[in-house]
Amino acid sequence: MRAWSQAERARGRKIGFVPTMGFLHEGHLRLVDRAKELADRVVLSIFVNPLQFGPKEDFAKYPRDLARDQQLAEGRGVDCVFVPEGSEMYPAEPVARVTGGAAAETLEGAARPGHFTGVLTVVAKLLHLVAPDVAVFGRKDFQQAVLVKRMVQDLDFPITIDVLPTVRELDGLALSSRNSYLNADQRRSALALSRALRTVEQTWRSGEADPAALQRRGMEVLRGPGVEPEYLALVDEDLQPVTRATARTVAVLAARVGATRLIDNVVLGEGVAADPTVRA
Image (cartoon, rainbow, N blue to C red; front, side, top):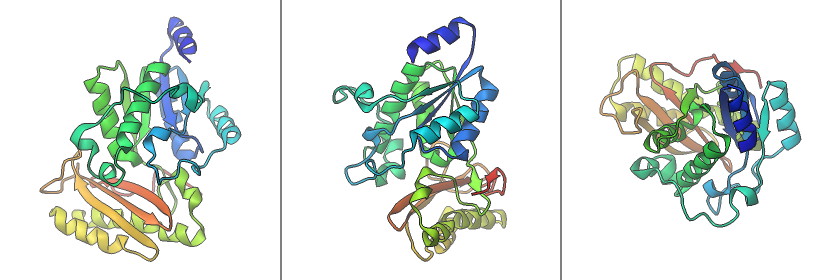
C-alpha cells in the first residue's frame, strides 16, 4: 500500500481515501464519487476492525462480501482496493492506542465503551499506510467524523477530512450495512428513526428552540412498534449539549430494532431531505 501511494505521489498525483468495513452500499459509493472530485487517484479500504467491537457486539456476523465489494468499487472508478488481514493490521496486541478524550465518552461512546478508541486507532493506522491527501467520511456516523477531524488536527496529519451528508433510501432510512440484518417488519419499524429526526427538525422550524422540548417530541415518535430507543440528543458541532437549538444544531439518535442497533442524525437547518436518496 505504501509503495503504491509513494509511486502515485512521485507522479504528482493527489490521493483520495475512503475507509470502509465493506459490504458496500450507495452511501459508500457516494464517498468514492466525492473522493474522485477531490483527488486524482482513489483508494478504498475494506477492513472489519475488531478493535472497535465490544465483546457482545456483532464482529463475527458483520456482513462481508469481498467479491461483490471489489466489483462495486471497480465499477465506481476506485483505483486501489486495500484489504489488509487482521494479522497484518494487528500482529500483536496494540501497545499504543488513540483515545478521543471526553468527547468520545458521550452518546455512542457511552453506549459502546472503548468503541472510539478502536475507531481512532485503526483510522490513524490506515491514514499512515495509505498516506492520502484527503479522506472522505459520511455524516451518518456524526460523532465519528467529529472525532476523526479532531484527531487529524491534534496529531498534525497533513490530510484534509471531508464529510458528506447521509445518503438515504426513498422512504428516509439512512443507508447502513447493518440494514441487511432487518427483516421486512423490522425494516418498516426502522423508519421511526428518520421520522423522529424529521419531527424534531419540523418542530424546530415551527419555532421551538428548547432542546428538552425537541428531545421529548422526537422520543414520542422514536418509541414506535419494535423500536427500543437508546438516546436522542441535541448537540453542537463539537458534540456539546446545546442550551438553545439553532440551524447548526445536530439531533443525534440511536435505537435497536430487533437485535440490530442503528444510528442516525440531522442538522436542524438542513432537514431529513428526500435528496440525496437512493432507491432500495
